[in-house]
Image (cartoon, rainbow, N blue to C red; front, top):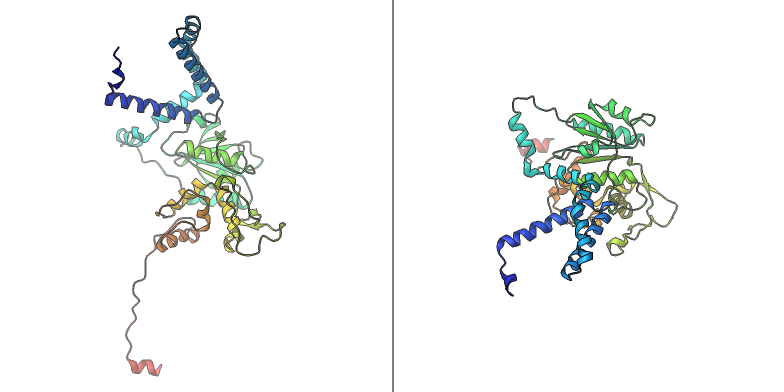
Length: 355
């Protein structure tokens, strides 16, 4: 072996290192926040010790560790069974496979799939929110949600408003857990969604909120979490957010003088209370708010900071006008247009004078 063999570095070696690093990073993201991360770190430590003892020619210890590593591959398959299954499922469900396009190419002769009636979904959500009925609804998109539907009861029920209301009725045996909707059919009930402990949410938010956010980050699904109607009340007192450089927004008025006063989200929006706007943003999730603004027609760059709830982002007038149309159109934005000219029928001056 020559001294400068290490300099014999080709582009293939660089690609090899990059792909290996990407694989490790993806595996880390997959098992982060679970018990499997501790097992994974333990295996990495044992592997490093084995390599060190092998380099130092410690024959006895290196041979024992070598045997352990040799049979450890089969042990890993057993220990990481669920993580490996989810990893392969995620890879097979990416856009690279063009699953939907390939499916349509081979099934072009089949009847077109009936899409979900979004207006009916909005109506039933409003009904549930008006009665303070909690609900967790997951809409499946391109990525299959088999790894979560198998935790509940698989069904095949056509979507309708009465069905959703009956499922989430407090005495219904199916109300506990989430439901998964694919197309226009409910495919699973009583589903247990994964909980990501690393989600940065205030401690007052429960597991339902965390699972709703977690499933949207791990998959391309949309999660609707009911239980926060516009009559939800927040204290107008200023809070300090340590994760954002101890930022403490305040209100321009004297609404925070009385610590016993609570304002609803509706009143906080109407009176432009900064503290309640920020609390509402954290309740919904910063990423979800930014995602929703894109759906409402906001195309300008948005900083990933909670101060966007107070108008820190620079937006055009036409963007704001389009976003506000959703308030009057059941949550659906309308493309606005300018009135450039108003024309009236010309009337002779003597007629105008006589009028």
